[in-house]
Image (tube, rainbow, N blue to C red; front, top):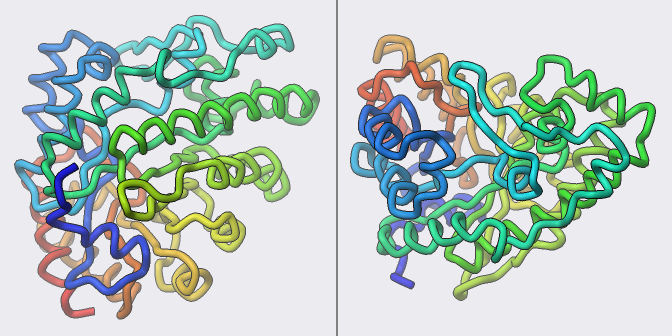
Length: 352
């Protein structure tokens, strides 16, 4: 593997001093870029793009050609694991992901098998290997997965949901059943992320997109416990380096201390969190990633700069901050506004 030329992101994750705050964006390879839309049209549909090693590599690298970012993130989807379990993932225009065979019964869950990434999701690890090679040490590569709870919500509902009625009904009426599903998913995520690490991912992030929909007690039992299992099961050292783990629970601001207790290296913060307060609570134990509202990118350049500077000022001095959005960038954002954002991080981070 090529020597890493820019390790700013990795150093910040380990709370080591850096010359400026590293920055990347969730969904940085995506529909806001015209060059991405061109490649997606060429691929035919979203999953065909994910499964085409060369094209998945191409779109992963696209934002790095435009912007001075400090990390690349694998182009894929959190729902590859349920798809590999046989649920039949498909996408409808304007409606997001859906499954042809959702899991609703004990028989459905018992029929599921823990995935073997090498045979079931080799297109993902092939992409990781190619991206890492093509990066040639320019920046680190992030691998990722959805959390077991978040994956389970899609698998039970059959699509995205506002209230997770089916998943929460199962949680409260058949908790042993949902635990069975979550256990299989946790083991699958461990296999999946370790395969990404072996293929070349230098950091991994777990996206717990819907953890914030749970009650205080339910979050600990049905989401965090399984992320703990994953953290414990991951390869911690590869190619002579530690492999940092980032946990991101959207709406998880109440549980930062419990998340830090898992032994992860960093926590992603959504835009509802005050970053200064978060640093005061857990900044001595974990790095913090975030946390600008993606909607800011619709504003004028002066507003974007003001918002960036406010977050940098809120975090203050000392290591351990990775600048990011508080969730993924949305497709309607103009690419020029992203440059304003990235440049503002570079411009102001030296002041703090």
